[in-house]
Length: 116
Length: 171
Image (cartoon, rainbow over all chains, first blue to last red):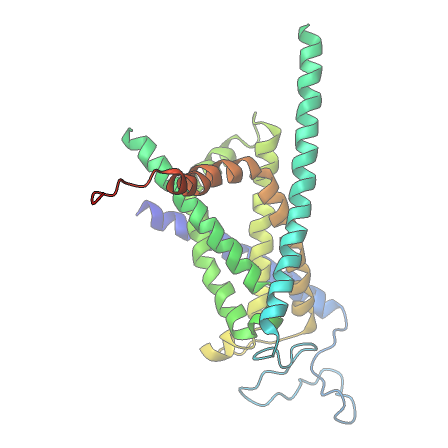
């Protein structure tokens, strides 16, 4: 029961953040002119305020989203991408741990000086 | 060993295994162009459940720091707390923007969502930010990572290799 309550609190926090994000993005989208699916390359531009015509059940592709599955060399790319991401995380970890250790040493040195 | 010690040991082991799973899944989900959009979406969605368990395992720490946040706590705990909230918010933004631009999961569930390019930009930005925050999160817990790996991974493996082979009874 306790665990269920905790899960509900987490889900409520999830929902709250999602709701706030959704509202913020909608507010920004409505205040600025955003590029939507206006059938680029299909002739005349869509009139202002008109909804894009998307056939039912079809999801229009965003740039760069084409043919991402079943590509040859996908595993190699996955490994390379993973190495890049792990490398980035490692750089952050090394930097922060090094700074933290350095600060702790300085603090200990200052404490030792005041004690002696 | 007391019951409390055994519980703590088991919880630490569970946390370690869970964190490794989250880390590997996150790395795979970070490469949708290689793993495929379907795997990317389903894997990322299933991470919600794992992240909830991760939060439940740290629940005592979360409630303790939430109560004492305004009062007197050390700066590292405060920084950790702020960072963890940032990770939570950023993770939620990634999930929402991911759902909004979903090409596999939402159509599979029969849900049609209005789409615009703002969600894609937000998804990419929040993912890159998450990578940085994850690095900071790992860095702040580095001593725990090293200690736990030593205790539950390296030492048991070394013990296996260093243990003397049993005497052959036939000789």
